[in-house]
Image (cartoon, rainbow, N blue to C red; front, side, top):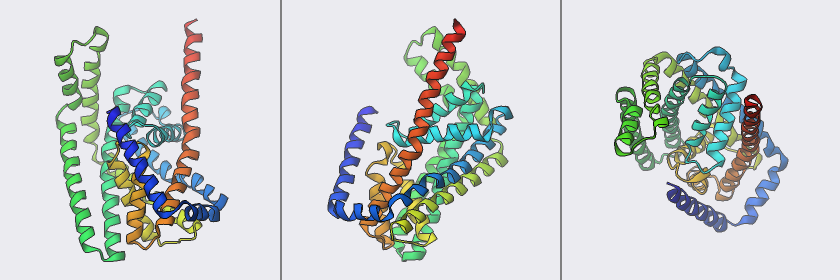
Amino acid sequence: MKWLMRSALVLGTTLGIVLVLREGLTPILALLALAGWSLLWLVPLHILPLALDVVGWRTLLRATAVPPSLTRPGRLFVIAAVREAVNRLLPVANVGGEIVGVRMLCADGAEAPAVAASVVAEVLLTIVSQLLFAAAGVLLLLHLTGKVAAAANMFAVLGLALAVVGALYLLVHKGSIFERVLRGVEGMLALPAHLRGLLGQAKALDARLRELLGHSAALLATLGWQLAGFAAGASETWLALRLLQHPVGVGSAVVLESLTQAIRHFIFVVPAGVGVQEAGLVGFGYLLGVGSDASIALSLAKRMREILFGVPALMYWQWSWVFKGASDVRSSD
């Protein structure tokens, strides 16, 4: 997996460099200079979509009977910011953040099976909402450009992806997947005694997950909050292009945001979506009449926001674990 991610990073970086060199660095930097410090507004603007996602996750945590004292919105927002920063800024194939989030909430006192079940369900719902948001983007692209063939191809890909997600849902809901995986590992390897207890945790996780996936109201509510979060995220694209002196309508902003984020999420092996995001914005921007220089400048503005929003979250994460370690040592003394 590490070899695959490293290769993907090299290919993505090469693609990004080629796109920049083809367009020329000077016009891209000129657009960024034109926007100047006003691009910093993208940082606080990101609070809204992340907060909407947090409301959705909180709904799932409540459905798994996690105590209200452990699901305070402020605390969940901090954990969600750390999760996102880990996924966006570290080479973890877009899944490491979920593991970190589970550990952080469990450190607060929550039961691991309940938290893990909420995160697994949230990831499944995120994929579904991402596909629905992308489908809305394709419809808007068809409306704005009349590109019937391109829209048909995109819908075919989205339909295939939705079928895969449906199969995955059935496997998770009906198949006791975590217990089966652990039993398979146990059958191939002689697990140490201290790891055999994981089988009981896997059974508990499967049970909690089956119970949670039966809460239709909670699932639909979470899906709605996630879609609202994706829609709010399109405001970042709309504002950034306006500041870069290449304003677009709300529909075009939704197209760029939905389809680019879909590509970035589903080609998850490329760390931080390097090159993938730039290529997506350039390609879809071309269909909408947005110049390549503006598309690449937009991508760089988005990456600036990810760094300024994510680095403090990563610093807090590291500080909190160091502080917790020191507290544990003092307690043992």
